[in-house]
Amino acid sequence: MIPTNSIGIVETQTFTFAQDEPFVLDSGATLQPVTLAYETYGQLNAERTNAILICHALSGSAHAAGYHAGDDKPGWWDDCIGPGKAFDTNRFFVICSNVLGSCYGSSGPTTINPAAGKPYGLSFPVVTVQDMVRAQVKLVDHLGIDQLFCVAGGSMGGMQVLAWAANYPQRTRAAIPLATTARHSPMLIAFSEVGRQAIYADPAWNNGAYYDQPSKPDAGLAVARMVGHITYLSDDSMQEKFGRRLHERERYGYEFHAEFEVESYLKYNGNKFTRRFDANSYLYVTKAMDYFDLGRDGSLSQAFRGATAVKFLVVSFTSDWLYPSYHSKEIVKALTAVGADVTYLDILSRWGHDAFLLEVDTMTGLLENFLGRLLREERDPSSAVRESYFVNGEGDA
Image (cartoon, rainbow, N blue to C red; front, side):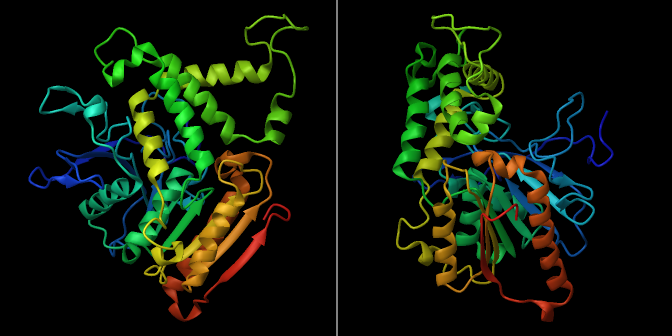
């Protein structure tokens, strides 16, 4: 039964760019045609000023809220999107699109290369986070929206938010990057590479040409997901959830099967992931994250020099060791240096990187307050007050 506060049944739509406009990527390669899968929730107002773009993380999709017909599980951020929720669809027109390179309807290695009549595989050009954002800009143009009310997202979604603010500051009033970074550190690149190497080592990967084969590189992809999933948790959350408890046994078996609950959990989630995601897409999206570096061509503050009119809510979590709080503090320091309006909160949480999805009450309060402030300023510009302050992990902010 669909909850009463859900937006109900939704459908994924697609938008294909004009055929006579090749899409030029950061690598210099061109892609044609380009299709984006997307969903929308709520109604666009007459002035077209109430649109919010939600950006998803590595394995996310356009299905951020509501239910697909026949499903019993809602979209990945349904807790925060819907009538009366943080992203209130009674007020806002919410958009979520699947990124380039993914496998949920947007152009990527799984889609058919019209020149070859078969899936691109590794012939699909390498994409960057900036490429993903440029594609989103075309979608927003297609929807007839000149300026977004807000762009929001966590993890890789937060990278897209930062790219929007840095490269298209005139196209959004506000930016909400959550649990994210302006550049991947060597440690993060190392974790990504371990996952990719697991896929490469799977004989079924076949250099990416496995779509017409009887076997797919599920073993490698499962290991990649297991490694990634560990980084989404925290020591405290793993201790609370699993401890050293054994799985369906009372004593050690002195064998190399999954004996501990945490082993069984990781194996289950790794195998489950292979039923919904594509190994090549994992390679492309993780590589895009590794390439991301907003300050590559200068200082990070220079990247934000044109974003002084954008209002920022930057959020990190104290137990996030994938993107520790110092990553967000570097972003805030750069924004402050150019005089941007920025609010920063470092939230005390036990849930690690996934806290932006799991701390529902905390996130709802933060998002409602921030978006409410923007709405008040829209109605009465004289009420606008430039903010720049920090809240550091003291209680549940």
